[in-house]
Image (cartoon, rainbow, N blue to C red; front, side, top):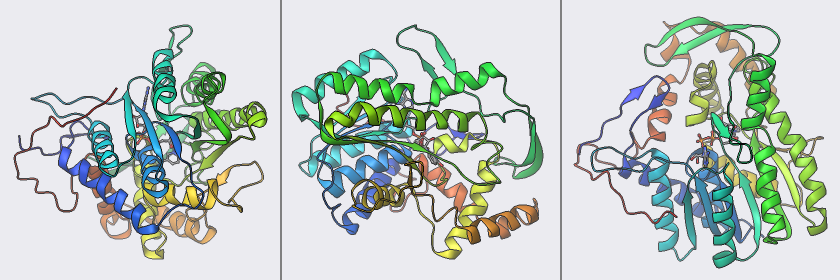
Length: 395
Ligand code: NAD
């Protein structure tokens, strides 16, 4: 079939297999060109491994450190008539490229929050991998079923305490209108913490530790975003920010539990980027269009793979990690540089529907969005007939 993007609001409902494979190949090329990560990990588990930051972390571990990798993701398989999700194609392309390079790579496609998938991962680790020395926790999900009670919780993206009114870009119509988001209830805040907080990260680490498959000096990292004034009301100081604060609690708890192994748990603060998760957050598309403009002009723009590689070399595997005073690895230093934020805030004040395409990088944002689904990738002929079914060996 000929596959063209089907965009509905902040989501694209299909994906292009060859475009996704090209994206994975270009991230692999980036890592190879940077060179090896000194003293990097050899056995890596990535939870949330098929798109965005998790995929980039897995590529960095495999192609920057020759690591065996086990990836966990939750993706929609392709059928003869419908494409799979982008993550499905990314994961298939990654496994193929890693295997071709002689690297162990297996992917479990299933609900990482469940006991069943944790048990499956332990089985594979014990059978194939030996002891794990890095666990990357990079899940982004709107809901979670507690495996012990069977209850399903949904997260919300809402401010806390009072309503928040802001400029917002409708990425379909390119209209900029004020949006008011009402504050979350106490229950919504608690549910968001249940979905996106640290509980599941701890459950994974407990399961791995109890099974004795964590190596001495193992590391684990979970990802967060802090942002600055413009995004605080909807992110940093909002429901998702509360959930992310819970990661700090979990990191402290994990550091105590891992002490006997000389292990280490950190939250890593990454920069704002166009991913499937961030596209769903109100205000973010306009903020990102402006941020991309400013950072590209400054020459400081980074994508997922640049951030992941820097996390490995400037955060996880260096004697002088970029840590803040709360033990978080800070890879958001370029985004949060005061001069960068000052320029973003100025453009934020000035932006209108009329000047959107001139003073922001909406075009770059839109390309990056389509690119997430394998469209607008370099070297792919989109007029060619492609088979939506791809070879994959997911467990
Ligand atoms: P993403 O949507 O690109 O990736 C999410 C991953 O989680 C995918 O691999 C998906 O398959 C997997 N997943 C979701 N639900 C699952 C489930 N139930 N079981 C198994 N796998 C599941 O998201 P992302 O933007 O890369 O975000 C990853 C992490 O990085 C999140 O914690 C996010 O908050 C954080 N982060 C994102 C940004 C940003 O701007 N995108 C910035 C800083 C931090």
